[in-house]
Amino acid sequence: MNDDTIAAISTPPGEGGIGIVRLSGPQSFAIARKIIFFPREIKEPESHRLYYGYVVDPKDNSSIDEALVSFMRSPRTYTREDVVEINCHGGIRPLARTLELVLSCGARLAEPGEFTQRAFLNGRLDLAQAEAVIQIIRAKTDTALRVGMNQLTGGLSSEVKKIRAQLLAVLARIEAAVDFPELHDVEEITRREIGEEVAAAGAEIEALLKTADKGKILREGLLTAIIGLPNVGKSSLLNALLREQRAIVTDVPGTTRDILEESVNIGGIALTVIDTAGIRKTENKVEKIGVERSRAALSRADLVLLVTDLTRPFAEEEMQLLQSVGKRPCIIVANKADLVDDVEERKAAILRRAAGREVVATAAVRGQGLEELEDRIKHLVFQGEAMASGAVYVTTARHKDALKKAQKALHDLKKALDDKVPVDLLSVDLHNALAALGEITGETVGDDLLNEIFSSFCIGK
Ligand SMILES: Nc1nc2c(ncn2[C@@H]2O[C@H](COP(=O)(O)OP(=O)(O)OP(=O)(O)O)[C@@H](O)[C@H]2O)c(=O)[nH]1
Ligand SMILES: [Mg+2]
Image (tube, rainbow, N blue to C red; front, side):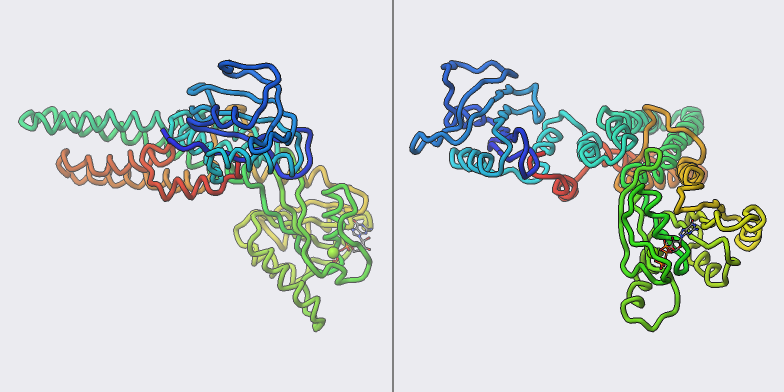
C-alpha cells in the first residue's frame, strides 16, 4: 500500500453540472476534513455516504464553493485505499481552487491513470481489467463498450487464467517425472500427457489470437480511405455516409484538395472515414500535395472504398490503385448508378477486370445503395458471424504479442517433446509460456511496462 495521498480533478475540464476532485490514500479523510466545513458537525463520517458542506480556505476561512462530499473507507473503494470525492460545481475555477487546497494540505497531484494503477497494485483489478477501464472511457460505439465491459468483468482474464492453470498442472507432472526418474513408465505416460495438455492449451491460445484483428477494430475503429479518380463522387459518398453535407461537392474535377477525416458508426463499428483528393497527374502545386496525401491515406487504411464512375469504363489508373490496395479489404463503389440503365452489365464489366473484389452500385447523391455498402462493410469485419454477447476479444497489441510469445514457447516445447528431449528440460519452455500469459493479467510484468500502460490514461482516472 502507498503511504502518500494522491488527488486530481476526475471530471473533464470545462463547464458542467458538477465536477469532482478525488483523493486516494491514507490522509484522504483528514485532508478533506481540513478544507470542508460541514454545517452539521460530523464526528466520524460514515463510509459511502454523502455529506453537505462548503469548501473553505483554512487560511482565511473564505468559502470557495458549495460541495457534496463522500468518504469511502478502504478496502471497498476504487483503489482499495481510503477515497474521498468532493463534488463541486463543474467549473474551471472552483475545481482548480479546491484541488489547490487539497494539495496544500498534503496531497500530491496524481499521475495519469494513478488511481487505476493503485487499484491494480492493490489487487482489485488485474492488468487486463485495468486496461479495460480506459477502453470503456474511449469506446465510440456500443460494441466497443460491450467488449470493454466484458474485459473489465474478467472475460479475457478468466480465459488466460484457465490456460495458465492448465500449464501449471503440466509443470507439476514434469516435476513429478523429474522426482521419480527411475520409473521409466511414468516418464513415457507423462510425455504423452504433456503433449496432449500442451496441444489443448495451444488450441485455446490460437482461438484467442483469432479474435485479435476483430478486437482491434472493435476497440480502435476502422481507418477507411475513400479513394478514386477526380469527380467520381468520393466527397458525395462521404457526405452520404455521414448523412451531412460535410465535404464540398462540385462538378469540377479536383474539388477536394486536402484530406478530410470524420467518424461514423456502421453497425457498431467505428469508422474513421477519410475523403481524399482525386488521384491524377497534375501540375497544380496545391492539388499535387493533395494527391500525395491521398496516396498516404491509401497506404495506412484498414479498409479502402475505391469509388469509380459507372458512366465510364473502369480505367487503367483505377486498376493501379487496386494494386496498391494489395491484400487489404477493399470495396469498389460503382457510383452514379442513377445515370445509367444497364447497371448490372457495367458492374459485371468491372468485376471481370477486378476479379475477386466486391462491387457495390451506389448513387451517392441520392443515398442509393448505401445500405448495401454498409452491410458489406459489416460483413467484411465480422465475416458474417454475429457478435455473441459475452464473447471474449483480444483488443490490444500488447495482449496479442503476449499470446504469440506463449504460443511460440508451447511450440518449442512440442518440438522438444518430439525430439525426445529429457522431460526435466521441458520446464524452461513452460516457464516462458507461463510468463508470457502472466503479462496479460499482470502477474509477470515490469515497472516500465506498467508505467507505459497507465501513463496513457487520463489524469484523475
Ligand atoms: N448523378 C449523380 N451525380 C453524382 C453522384 N455522385 C456524385 N455526383 C456528382 O459528381 C460530381 C463530383 O462529385 P464529388 O463528390 O465532388 O466527386 P469527388 O470524387 O469528390 O471529386 P474530387 O474531389 O474532385 O476528386 C458532383 O457534381 C456530384 O453532384 C451520383 O451518385 N449521381
Ligand atoms: Mg471530393
